[in-house]
Image (cartoon, rainbow, N blue to C red):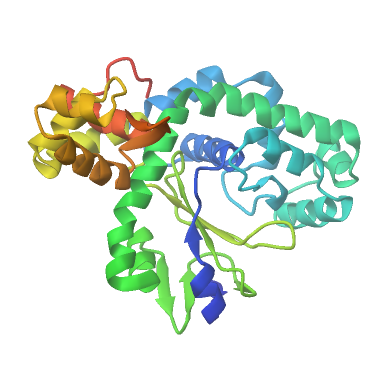
Length: 336
């Protein structure tokens, strides 16, 4: 059982990540790919997995030694940075003592000796670090980057759906909705898994919905370089075909109302408030009000241009709009 203890400061500082972390998504996408390869029973087809197998670059093969279908996995690639270059710089700057300790822990229950490049990495050799960084970048570019809009839509959609739960019941209620293996008990969070107990030390827990991950929540134990984090599968899961299927079953036109649906349709091209009002046939005040509601739901964004503002769709808004226009069919031209 993984036990994460919270103080009052930890509760105050527990928060959602502002955006998805491309390097963490890349690592977990590979783990998900490997889990699917060893699954005992056939899972429903997920097009992104087939695409990932076809697109998998040969330069990323060293990562197969590092990221097995089951943990533990090394923590030095868990940078929550929202910029890939920043995250890779973090990996490259990992001190030798961290590399050695992290890799020893990762390998402790694996059979045999690590391959030579892993042993070189544990020694902090520059060539091994270059190999790792190149493998991570190439895997991201081939497998994750083509689906990044779906990742953003899944991430922000999940956070939006969690907000009413937090408002009504706090963190205890929230944790109960993330996964059946999570349970709030006696001022802390329990999760089935490795036997370990961790104090957050007043820094709180970073909550990160994951688009490619479909397994149980993963607890990342923080240190002086990284915050403690909880990775969990975003709902609906971030693969575009799942996102499309669930959205189509929600009768979104009824959910958001015909006028707001019309506002979303109008914003296939960016509009100012007065222009939006004229397109939809409502007053500017009403257009501004509907825009605020949609903006609060991460469906649109508003930017100031001089004395006026301009509204445009977010990736999540484009996904939702695709369902309104297609009646729940997959988005035309969007890869799964």
